Length: 316
Image (spheres, rainbow, N blue to C red):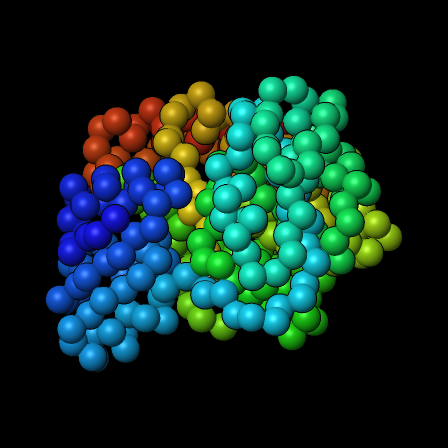
């Protein structure tokens, strides 16, 4: 697909091309005005700029290319119950050896990859079962609706892990081109732009890599959710902004309430104080919903209230 701008209609075409696996060639004469270039450039495969200074400024944001001679052996573990995971083609095309292991409780398909039918036992035990079945030297944890970007993105994680002396590393999450403003801002805060790997005090299994032998010696905890949060507390974690993956969800009150409640239960289990410990605190927190609603529109109000209720319920 050929694009010459990143206006709203072009972003719709870009998202459709990404989901179908079509390569995207972008020709630009100037910087995008309404979106961060570092969020958009990793979504294209080829960039053409007539202006050398513009090309020099934008090219570092492209997804990591393939480099010959990378001999890493990686097993990508993808739990799913929704059919064929989105990122399979991208993982198969990496410049290193990637074995894809799809964990399913029935219904998933992954032609050419290993599909292991396992009963769902929560995020921690289910992913750990995948570790025991993996054959690679490294394990890449990801999810079925994440799309890795760049033929060298997995190798970028491996090399950052080894160079930084980390126990695990995770990559940058980018929103889909049509994502709402709240989602875009939150992902930008959670996995900010940059170029150099650095140590952080958080972990995220949307796109994360660790050595398999470490995970066998020190397995993921047997928790239903937030196994990355628990495991990361006792390990050295690195964040790699140069390893992008497209991953975001449409916000809906029901799913936001359940996820926020469950996550805050795990924060409390780790001894953290509740963020919304009482009904009085819930009422005091209500003015905080105003800025996101002003940013995204009145449809965001139920989402904000659902998250607040989830924090209160989870903290109890």
